[in-house]
Length: 229
Image (cartoon, rainbow, N blue to C red):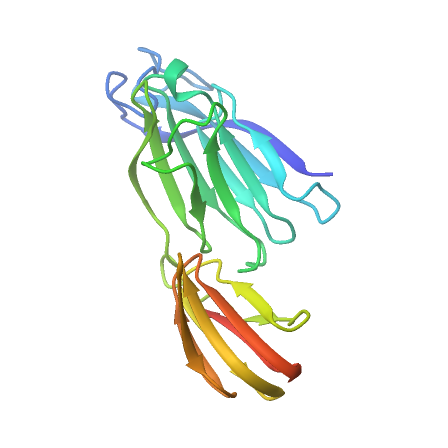
């Protein structure tokens, strides 16, 4: 079962209550000591377990401001409140996998299907990826963040186990798919509605963006890996 931890921490100092995160910060300092200029922000940590449903669905409440997500062993879907009734609310979502797994996804959606930064969903595809959003009363707008490896973190190479031929692998992030060995007769790259042929045999290296598909046809399974950018 997933581990959900909610706690408060005055990690922000000197935030203007009129313009601070969420837009509805109290006009007076609160929390232990009540030091001038300190405001408490709720922090929620979501740790998915392998036994959780796939994906683990976490419903964000109005009181969740900073959300840390560990998707080391299971996909996680973060469901934001209805943007049309959350005008001014701000959320920060950060991926904090204990053991980053590029095969696992953290996706962000709106509970009512409203757009999240102009799309039906957004994804955190890298360790320490951050998505900072605020509702404008219509949708969730991205105000900041980073969706690449931050502060020098190096993402590990992920092994890919080919299924039945032709095998289709969907890239979870930007990077390179490496195909070696086996008996391969065709390697294709599909982006959207367009499919191109990359090679007629292994070895091959295929640069990909998030969502790209690599299709491998073989009679003896090759070795495949995903190298995050």
